[in-house]
Structure formats: structure tokens, C-alpha cells
Length: 122
Image (tube, rainbow, N blue to C red; front, side, top):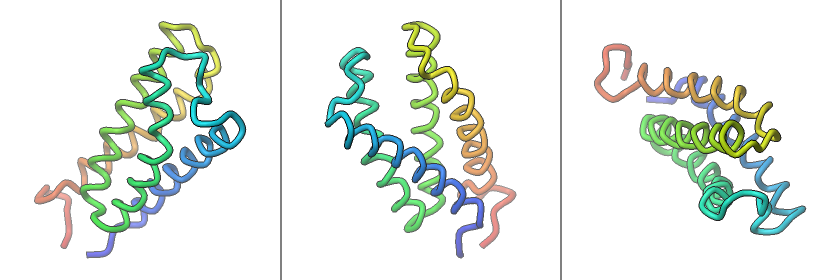
């Protein structure tokens, strides 16, 4: 079965995220988020290859890609909300609400198209 068009939108969202991370790496090197604690910095650095890998997974095994993207987005929103609300990095104030919306959409799609679920086709 071909993936639904909504999967292409998810891949597009990941591509936008990857582009933002790539720009940061190009401008600031492989440790561009030095303002943050090392574990968060490592997580943020890993988002570039993870986003690109998920785009490939969505093209190859789109249902698995949706579930994996949903898991990554939950982690991403959690880490970024922590950085914003607990650590006080106000640069995340604009990004977190957008990421919450994207994560909610991905979670809804992953639920809708879960393997063997009532809303799946094919």
C-alpha cells in the first residue's frame, strides 16, 4: 500500500527540522548548542541524523516511520520544554508550541494508521 499524503507532510516537517539543525551545524560546528547542558546538547546534535533517518524510514516503512517519528517528537518536545520552562532558555518559546502541534499531528496519524488498527486500509 502506498503511504497516505499525510506521511509526505510528516516527512516535510522532519526535513524542515533537519534543515534548521544543519544550518546550526554549518554556522557553529558539531557542538552548536554549547549554552545547554551536555546531555541536552548531545540530544540536539543527534536530531540532524535522526530526522534524516526518519525521512528515509517514512519512505521505506511508513507505518514504522510514523511510530518512530511520534516517539522522537515526544522526546523533542519534552527536552525543549524543559530547556525553555525549567532552564530558562527563552529561545525555545516560539519553537515549542509549533513542535507540540507537529507532535500531536504525528501522534494522531500514528494512531490512525497503526498496523491492524480499525482505520487502516490495505
